[in-house]
Length: 317
Image (tube, rainbow, N blue to C red):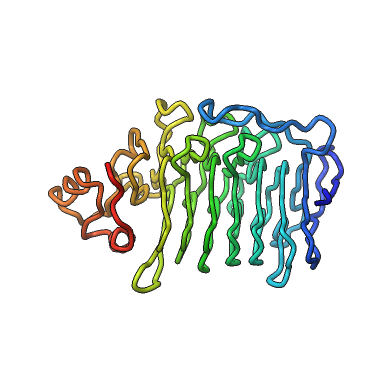
């Protein structure tokens, strides 16, 4: 694996490097730069103390992707230690390789403390349109990404298969104690197969906060199972990294009196404040919502959630 070296951060804009067709592994590693430091905070400490030295910013008025791979790009791509913002999609994967994104700040400035683009269209974090078993983040603290201050944190309208999303801060600043938020959802996937968001290990826990239209939105049309093998577990929704401070999700700023669902949840995902059990869509009766709280299962009134439960056995308590 040969790392590609980039110029260190100087405060000036850089044009976006694009990958070329290859059948080898390509690693773009910002942590090779002098002064760059990987995150060392343990999973139970939450946030990221990473220090980045490479910043990619779209200086053009044209809509461009930051780092992207074409449909026929055969190389396995590893992207590490970059701050990327002001692009239509900060990272776009179209290939079927097992690409990885680790230790990056997507949508924030290089400090990870504020949204880099406060204009009308801050772009999306990751567009995942290939069928690859991508890994976004990881259980190693150095792999923790910050994905905040965007429209979608990540999205896919194709069929993902085997993608893992682990250990990320989605909607918070790098410390994990303040909301930067994404203007739509943290994750928006369709027809997700064998996708794991979080995990039983605390090191795989994702933090979702401040995502205006909800933390995770899954939609699909596959039959008979809509999301076969897909699991969402062990994450934190609506809290800071300590699990005590209410930072919310689904607050729907354009219509705050009508907060939106967080997601259909598996066991092991603690909720706080405005997120607590706001999982059913409007139109459900109080009796239906009480049943949802008691059983942990989705009920009529939320067709997407109901489809998801039909395709998955209920986890043991």
